[in-house]
Image 1: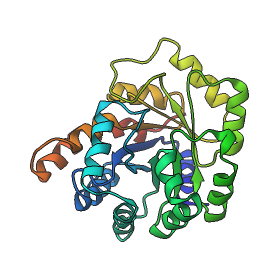
Image 2: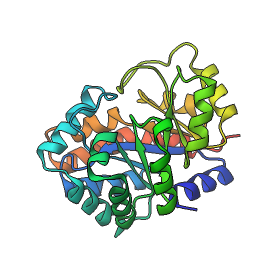
Image 3: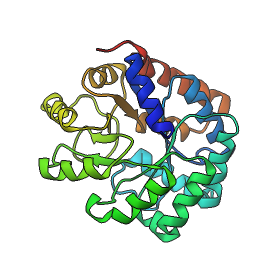
Length: 268
């Protein structure tokens, strides 16, 4: 049982929900990324999605695209990325998930990337544009390295394809709250609850919801339906602001503390 599986097992036993923040590695800097992850853990994060930057993040909105571009400008490559993970591991055992796209991982080689990820202390991978139908080699590699391989499901996912995703995936299922790209939103789509309930009923894996989660009310709604919530753009936007790092951390705390709070309540 790797750290991701263990985290969800503990949460289920205690009737809590997972709080899963997303940040882009290296923004605003490498040392700052390490400190942000540790602060997120103190604020209640259960799993960290650590973005591995790609030049064409087509599923991401303007905020996450800007962060990916900034990370590339700062020279975040595989060496820099895994060095950050290793520094986090010196001080924390929080589960960490590679969140990226197929291209940069394929360029390095699935086998080589997975070996380096495991050696650095990673616990899983989510490649946004990896079709489950083309993932058999990566599934085998992740199984060998004891890395969770997370897949996405969307409001447009058919029952037939969902079955394939659930057969191929491990760790948890990431459900996209809406069609389109990442970014903060004011409300959920009208049929959100019904679609999420159907996904939860079908899934043998824990289900977390992301894309657009930016308020405590959003988090509370999701916690009443599934096993966890991802917060991305609202957090990433703070890491892009031009201000002293101490002020940035204070802003992150002010944002994250009320968002994480509902996940720490006791849920049926």
